[in-house]
Image 1 (cartoon, rainbow, N blue to C red):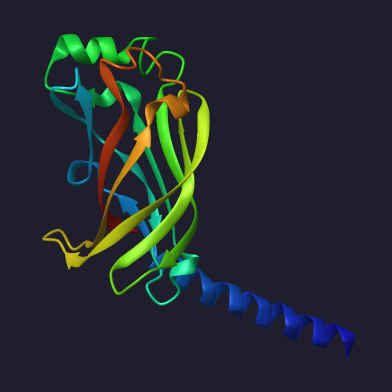
Image 2 (cartoon, helix red, strand yellow):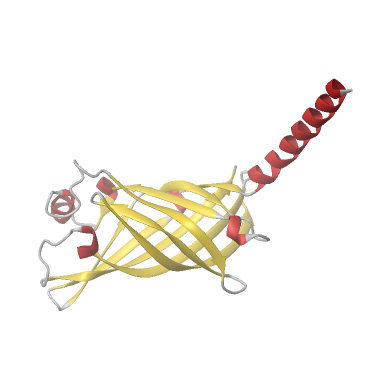
Length: 193
């Protein structure tokens, strides 16, 4: 009798696990580096703004539209992929005075919580790490939508605009001539796995 009960319980648990796997996979997306952007701007000598980007962001996204609190995002980019359309400046930004790419090759963001604010707006709280320092930040993100691509894939996308202080991460070189505030635009498109 106990053996039969154990077998029944084991079969039910296996069935529950098998049913749960497609649900988890259903919400899993992989960031498409060629259709995602990380843009930034910083004040230069008080006279204007310099703009740049980080190429080829990667990561994973889990988006549960019905239960947004179960959603999550992880984004990574190589610091060496900085691009301001000026090779001399990019080389300087990669040096120890700025991004120190030899010692800190990756910049990352990992969410801790996601809350729905309105129909398309979400509040995402998470840990931003670069130059060996991690700071918890809270950003607003807009869900752009869903779409099918010509290759049979299914996509979703988000965009967030926010400001950080570079000094919070120990990037103090040229404070004054260069602004402390860095404006960021993160635009992510991800393909369902």
